[in-house]
Length: 270
Ligand SMILES: Nc1ncnc2c1ncn2[C@@H]1O[C@H](COP(=O)(O)OP(=O)(O)OP(=O)(O)O)[C@@H](O)[C@H]1O
Image (cartoon, rainbow, N blue to C red; front, side, top):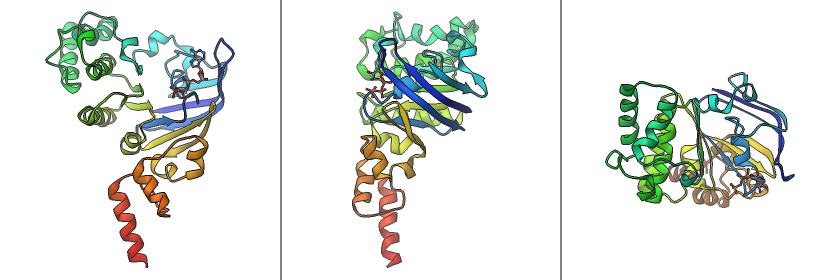
């Protein structure tokens, strides 16, 4: 997978300049998180991936294809977008209908649709509530239903807006499992998130934004050690990284295991 944002600017109709000359590229399938303070342009950036928004200036290309050269409906078949609030996404009378909707729209036969609903409903943990109305689900189940409605399309890029919001520890494990499986299946997962623990653990690639610009992009474990960069973006690294930075450790630390290793290494070096 190759995504290129080339000198992209975007201005909303009310005059808000949400992106200013953003140039960044993404290569491969390692999950990418976009972080930065509220209003820094994270969601606006990712909404350019399926043509929901089009650059006021510049160009977004996916595998060499300019996004604006195809209709949003066409991109929707290969680029899934899961909104922060599932109520903005779910509109049908049952979980099953939500999961079937996309595949039906692209004319898949009923055997294939049933197969996809079977596989995805188990993956998202909703196989026992397929006939329930999504509005009767818990907030977390609703969120997984929204994931599922996109996953049955087998997207090649999945964009998640604040996926961990309102999820408990078990949900986070399920989410992490889904992200890992998608990578194995050849899907690039990109997420907007303020949850730096989750980002540090499951997103090896990071884009750091501030005031409509990309401040840095690269490997998460390296960028998380750049105190000045994160301060500029108003991003707090996860607690374990803060401990490492406070202790003057320079090697990347984004997990307790890495912290222990770095401390032991420091002792051995003395
Ligand atoms: N539909 C819209 N119309 C007008 N302005 C908007 C719209 N959506 C976002 N904005 C503005 O564009 C800027 C960037 O917003 P965006 O939602 O992309 O930021 P964000 O980094 O995703 O923020 P958050 O972390 O709060 O979700 C902000 O100033 C925001 O108020």
